Length: 357
Image (cartoon, rainbow, N blue to C red; front, side, top):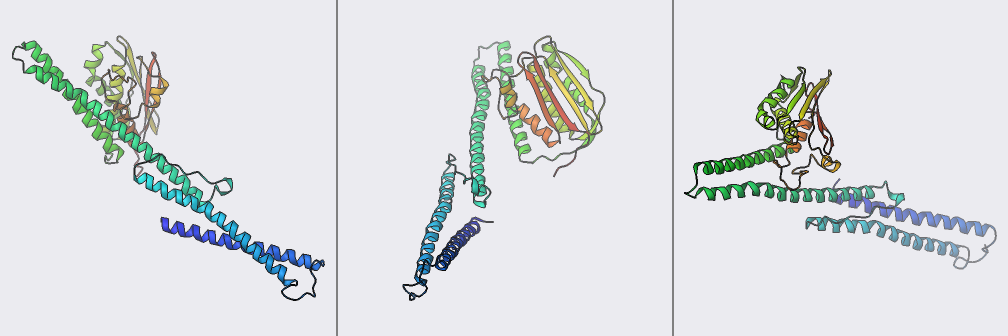
């Protein structure tokens, strides 16, 4: 139903209410006069204008006035909220989301008008939240791009020095290469998340061994965990699933990569798999720096990092991507963590992907 139709509906309801109030008031007054006349308050022999009809007319006129006043009050009660709705729409169109309309009293809580007010306030809250997220997103993207770009610019300038030794030149080139890689990963992750959020990625399920995929991910990250002398304790019995192999590869790469990055030297990472006929659960546990409750609460937010100084490598998109992929693949992610104790991340996936669309 459009706005004009709703407005006509409420105006019709107001008119009917006013009419009913006047009618009911008139009937009550008429009954009252008849009762008074029957007990002899009015003289039945008096002429028309001064006799028993006149009090009735006066009572009816009074009821009309009372009904009109009550109707006017009700009309004001309803139209005030329509005026507020119009003012709210005007403010929203100008980008002002700090506007709420008071809900109706308890007697009108279930009315269509109150439901419209609740929907309007919810819309304003969501628009305000979206505006805040957009501002934060732009700010964070700017920061994440600025740092490696400044690094590249600085070291390219240094490379112009003809007096550089071969070792210094190689060092600067390696730093530029690393900064370029970070920019590439950042851009790639932003594009992937954008596609996931806008349902522009189609699941391509096929049967494959998810245990083998996790083992291959560990081998691929060998250079990282060897530097910190990290051992792996694995319990990965073969498990065949039907899901998107390429998308889920990013899940294991991000989670295991984080486990390595935040683990202490000479520690270990435990990965174990359990399954039944319907679901498979893969848990990755590290004994690293861990996270507090606030960090865990926001871990899936874009660009959120527990290390607000951004001193650790990463851009705060990895776990956002993990969560989006798992949801798209019909699963979910559970996180338990404790500061200076470690973190356990459990990924739950269906054995057979079922398209929810």
